[in-house]
Length: 330
Image (cartoon, rainbow, N blue to C red):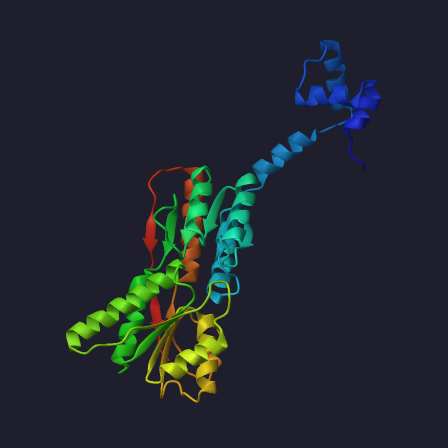
């Protein structure tokens, strides 16, 4: 059955559409008798104003927004899957956006979500300066996952990345590695910077305790791009004595494996690798890869729980939750 429109009400009463609109939206005083006739016609015709429909929908549809830094990374794919499952348990929809490590895209998605008045936002931040300005002007609860920034008015759930970087480094040292490098995307990315810091701290501590000078070597690729194979190959050619590699992400790890194979460097005979996030393909590779495992399901579930708690019980006290990581040795 065709739904009744404002035009139908106007035709039924003999008044103009603008007059009917003023009665519905209360945008202008309308003569009492005219108003009564229009309201009666609305009732008789079962007319429901669009404004009321929008209001009902807004109340009924509960949505949590999620802005992920790079959905191509297995870590974020797992995070999104768990976010959606937990949000549904709480009776919320999940609106997903991917910033692709772009500050411009992140800002666009934030503006969209704040204008749509989502119930809460779960965010892996890229550009903290612009993000801070946007979120400071909004009353929408925000929870950061994976990446932390003390300047953002938000809660945080993730692992201690500096501690994990140090743990990965100590693991390679215990395996006898003496020349360890760190491969990462741009150091302005919070997780990469923290993991790199942990790597450096562990090497410095080992140098101090052993009396040996352990060389610190970094390779930084560009954000939102794959590490350049030719640049990485040149890096390994230049540093032929490297016997340990820490990869900041699993995608970087695959690039490193490809380059090392091309250079006939055997893993783990010539070079040992520790990477982040336990990619599903690692068990099928001929190359044994040790990985730092982040509890993606727990991170996502905790983030949604905090977001829902913020929605229902607003608080000014921000929470910073570090969950335990583990290491899968191969």
